[in-house]
Length: 306
Image (tube, rainbow, N blue to C red; front, side, top):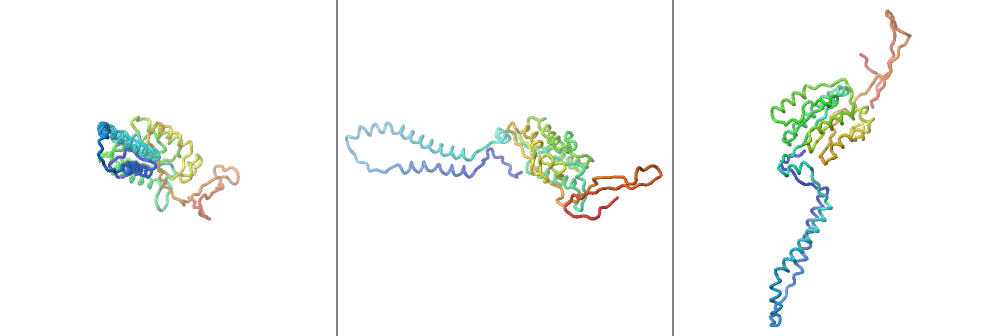
């Protein structure tokens, strides 16, 4: 996101090459100037007839020379333009014809059970809500024409807010709803999440540009099995297909991953329970044996029970 209030209609993959091409346009001009030889005029009566004919054709010849010079400059400029590879986004074209350049900002908040992991630094869910709050505030300041949507991963078909402009009233309502969100006791279905995002964007055919922000702790059990790294830096085919299908019609799309998890978080789990001493009936006691695994990098010799 940028703070500039002026949209740029065209962008270039290699803008430096465009500048070099524009500078090269001066070469035909220099050749034209150097080719103009200075000569000494000598009056000769026999040449009067040729001079009269030259005067009649002078304007036509000069026009042809200017056209030839312009075509040479245009050829060099187009060559530089081709190497620089300009491109236009649909939102920029719409803005050029008088429409507002709008981007749908979709914030996808992970509210699965793992986001409630407590540590001295708080929970990932609290950090996720704070990240959404800061990002939305920046959108409100830098891109007031953009609309904002907040989705939860466990209920992606039920937006917290949908396509709102961040005026004072909507801003206060958004903060109130964001503060009231709590984690669920469910996991997440990532292919379903991204299909739900694509379905939401498809409902409004006027959306030509979308920016999707995924805020999560990127648990390996949710992401790595589907082709993404544990840090969430890479999508697998099952996740990207839905959004790619939406963006296929020359729509603008960007996806930003915001990791609010802890790098060295403790990760212990009960992986098995067994009963010792046979069947337990009413009035008797038994011993339950638990198998606990430590999946964290730190070595632990004691596990709290409670």
